[in-house]
Length: 283
Image (cartoon, rainbow, N blue to C red; front, top):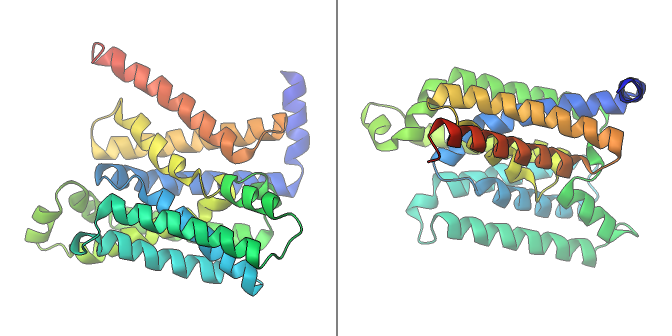
């Protein structure tokens, strides 16, 4: 144990490790807050779909050789999130079918573009890094950390400021509309926040594993806690702790950061599932 602590202390002296921890905590916190709402509204799969859209946008940005691909990825992901969350109920192709179409289509087009307009000698490595995170969280630049802090601050501020409205449209959107809540505007807000979270989370766990940050903490908390507030707080706590554990293990053991964080989330879910079973007498 002293050797592990000494090894961790050594790694913490490097700025890129501190950047990874800061970004990991912020992204996990933001993901878990909206995760509860998305799970309850049965939009759990939206994170996966939007992450694939972000991958497609990243491929286009790479082909165009943009100096900062965030200027393309974020607007495109936000636009698709609005399309899926705000207009999905009024279109002929609804819900999960629309998400599946967008998800598979964006992933296929992105990979096709990266192959046709190759900008790297190691396409497979680039694709693997983007899809599974790999070590991209450990290569963050200072300006990317600042951007993450600013965007995370906006997400947290918006969630806290509009907590009551988000709560009302999560459980009964029709009732909320009847009481005068502008449900369209707040669904739009949720769509934008989710898109921002997805783009931020891609550096942490990769495009294919983003949904885990959104879904697992929320489901874990729901097994033990019952009120919306307690589930949200518990989900945020679980997500941050699992992220820290995953990053530390990945640094010490040399495992992929994203996959290690998701593995920690899975273990946490198993633990809370067991606690829930015991509390409910096996039901």
